[in-house]
Length: 404
Image (cartoon, rainbow, N blue to C red; front, top):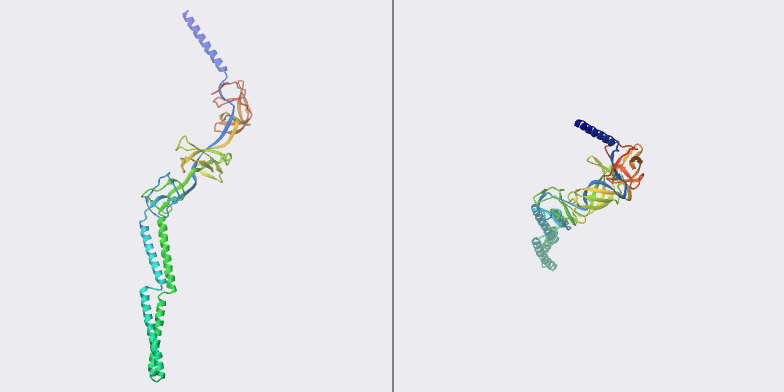
């Protein structure tokens, strides 16, 4: 009796389980759905870029040498003309002193020439010239006196001739001294002295300019955003000392993949984020579209130039940043999750829920974001569309909708 009851219980349980399996098999499958809603749709184009100042100047070495001191720090604000670094200049100081000495000597030589010669030599010639003129005057008086005496037969012809010769000798000596004085300074001597002075002054100017080039100064007011030297560093001509720029407003070169360039237009808003300061954002706009396509790693990109406001000056030039270009914004847009969009041979469509049955509905799409797509035709606000599932869906299929 007990055995019969036990067997009946097992049979009843098996029958119930079988009925449950049949009922479960006849239940429609559970399928996730999402509602079509209306709201503002902002289409963003995410990419990356590099920051640079709009106004900046590089400071480079003109001479080779060792850096002696660096009185500024990277990130420091400087005024135009402030000292950024100083190079060791001991050899150039010696060159400057030698050039100054040559200029002083050349000026002294030119002054002597312009004065007519050396003072001692001029004095000697002038004294000799005065004595010669005195001798000539005496000889001339003596000659005149002897001529009168000869006319009175009081002097001989030989005495007159001797007096005349003596007078002529005095005149010849005067002529020689005059020529000697004139020969002390010639036009060629003065021209040569002036040329030597110009050469010496040019060497002095060069030495001063070379010394000035060893003091590196800020070419403009701004921030020292790249400082490439430290005390003791050796520089070759052309090596970078520092970059100075105004960073209250920056340019970002944003790299946009070639297929996406058609979405970008001048004036579109841009949002910048930087891993160096998580949580911070910088706003700006597209300034200029690219003029060429270039390779960037495995990508083909165009450089879109954007202007970014940096009022607190904490976004650093040279940094690699993330950029989101707002390519479109549609107010009161009808949209749905992008993953609900499917395609067949006829184009895009969705599985629309009507009662508990799937209906294939063609749609026309518009703007899109990373997660949502605008629906221009085919759906209405509040419609339910099927999301991706492991099940194979078909039109006319009954489903059990689930809303995540």
